Amino acid sequence: MSTKVPESPHLLVASATKSFSLSYRLTQLLNQLQPSPEIIFFISAFAIGGASGLALVLFYLGIEFFENLAFNVLMSQISAWGYWTLALIPVLGSMLVGLLYYFYPNFSNYNCLQDQSVVKVSPKLFLIKCLGAAISLGTGASLGPEGPSVEIGGNMGLLLAQLLRVSQKRSRLLMSAGAAAGFAAGFNAPIAGVFFTLERVLGTTFTTPAASIILLAAVVAATIARVVFGIHPAFELPTYLVVNQWEFLLYIGLGVLAGFISLAYTQGIKFAQRSFQKLEVIPRGFKPILGGLTMGLVGLALPQILGIGYGTLEVILSGKIFSIPFLSMILVIKLVVTAICLGSGLVGGIFAPALFLGACLGAVYGQVLVAILPPEVGLIAPPAAYAMVGMAALLAGSVKAPLTAIILLFELTQNYLIILPLMAAVGVSVWIVSLVEAQPMVQTLNFKEMGINLTQQDELEILKGVSVARIMDVDYFHLCDQMSVLKSSQLMISAKCHTALVVDEQGQLSGIITLGDLRHAIRDNSDEIEGLSIGDISTKEILYAYPDESVTEVLKRMLARDIFLLPVVSPDNSREVLGVIDKPLISLASDLTLTERAIASAD
Image (cartoon, rainbow, N blue to C red; front, side, top):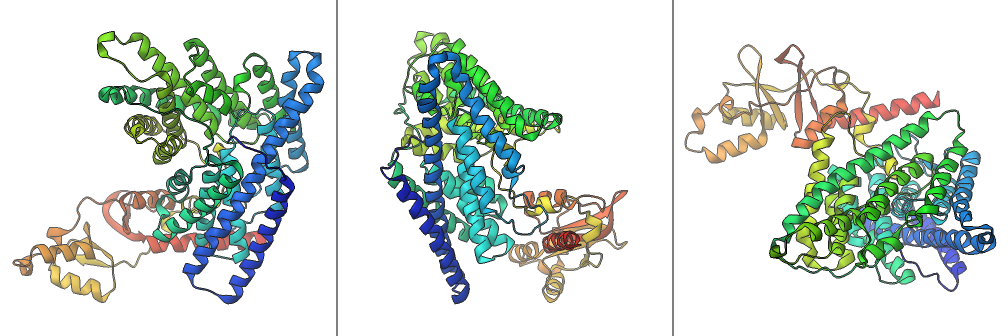
């Protein structure tokens, strides 16, 4: 974000302190008055958005403070020794981050309380993490501020959840609202912030009340950011023009390339993180120095890759033509250096580097098209246009958030003409990543590997070690396949049963039927309903669960197909029913597991 330092930064600190104090008093008042859930939602959205917006203003001022201290004040003193002193800046910054690791070894993972139902946030370590990110980014780490911005907002939501003492589900919602506020203020793009949270944070738990609180929090945070920094976006983009209507087909090729570069980027980060973890002979506090040293040495030859990179990004997007070899070189080196910075422990996110890489890729692709297309094809858009679309395509492939990438570029350009090229390139990029991701050796990044440490556990993570046999219900409701539809309906209504197994005369599984199936059958076959049996209308293609299977894998299948219940069958005979597993049982298993862990930790 292009920031403008206010005339009196201390006033911001004072207002932030007052805001946090006011939020605390407000939550105490809410606990006493017990207002309706709708009012709590409304007030929580404003509290999270306001606190997140102010916290992010201070965070960006911190980045600018360390950047000015390092590259202006310090460099003016040591530059007389020679140009090589530029390499000292990232090294000194990484040494400060290493000191933070020495005194606070787990400051980058401070809210990973894996055995608690509601994550507890330490305000002290939260501030240390923000300081580490400001030092890393201000002294030239090849990372971005948006990841920490999302984390700052998310932790504002978690702090409010702690004060209100809400349930785990409500705590996750408040965290999601804060994450949206952080993204919205970081990019000055509130709509993209909402879509990012709905795609990557909430996922399948999205509900209408959740959308309301996320929208309000994002608007409030973005408004505060605009009051301080102005209404301009994080970086300036040129106007996109359509030259040929058929040209969007060329963006499909850009999407293919972006998909493969996204995979190289994400797998490079995972490889770097694994490699640094294996360096056990090096103390944790010294590993960031390796990242800073690499950054400094590379920065001597290519200063364009130092820091967040928005300045270089705007030059590429302005239409200035760099040579294809140069753009290709900084693309590869930026990718490698970003992976090393994140793997070594420097604090930052992967969003800004992904945008940088996408711009380089798009500019190279655009220049190649200009060089190889024959004149009779006609004019095409300049390389800068492909650079803009490349940013979205590579961001979408890297973080698996296609709608966020499309909406973000649309908000930044405020030009509807860019939508079709964006949809083509982003869609193909994410498709390529999904195809390769199907291989067992390839996995995309999780939040922690992106530089975002919002690690509140969801059901999928909690239930990884729980087997189906442990929670399945052996006393299940079943019906004979020869029973009539009307009688079956009456029995299921009396039993208050949503889904029933259908078995044959030998008690072997033959199908599954739901109240919805029966209702549709009665409505569509009213003339011949008397002679219709449930064996005629039941679902024969059945998804199964096995007793030794992880509940996490079963839940994934149920969520993908929106299934309420699965039969648990014998591994040797898929028609031999051992029990059933349904969504209420899975929720109960989650609560039981968390309670057991709490008891174990107390002992």
